[in-house]
Length: 238
Image (cartoon, rainbow, N blue to C red):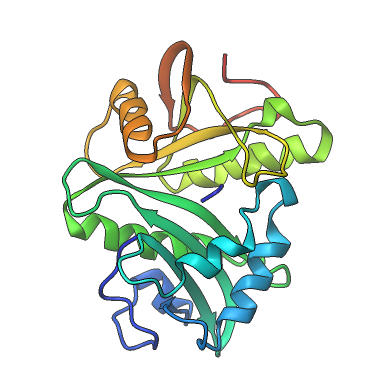
């Protein structure tokens, strides 16, 4: 998913870690400047994990990293001083009680996948968002499996299932695409929502539309599907 927040995050590992991250020996901290030694590995994971058409320009990192008041947050999960997972999210809540956290990217180092590091990082972040008490939901985008073929479609369904197992619902009945950079082709995406309080599909749609200013269109009855897709490659979206 194209996938802002934590005053508790420091450049070091002194803040309390979430239970799962702690059990895995993962140190999770925010990268706050270009002199952070974790930044090169963070960038490598980000660039390697996503298709070129889903990557925003590198200049966006240059503009947002370390900028005072930026809602963009760059998070690294490390084990034994090696960065194993990254996240980039935007705090669209802005201290209000009606906004959302927008997860732009979440990825794990290619040599360390399948070990639960991505889930541990996301759960740690979600615990902190939830404790703020003012964020309505975490929202994120994933590739639309119906717009893909072969292995990429299978991977997209698995990615949706991954987020559903972590409590996210797939928003159905909508049409949405992104152009991550001016030179990139449009890519069809799905929206997913992890609510921190009861949220119906209509409210999720409005939360995404208002918080992210996304050009999202209704194309059918809205729904939130929290159950993992049972049959890969069988469309569940209108």
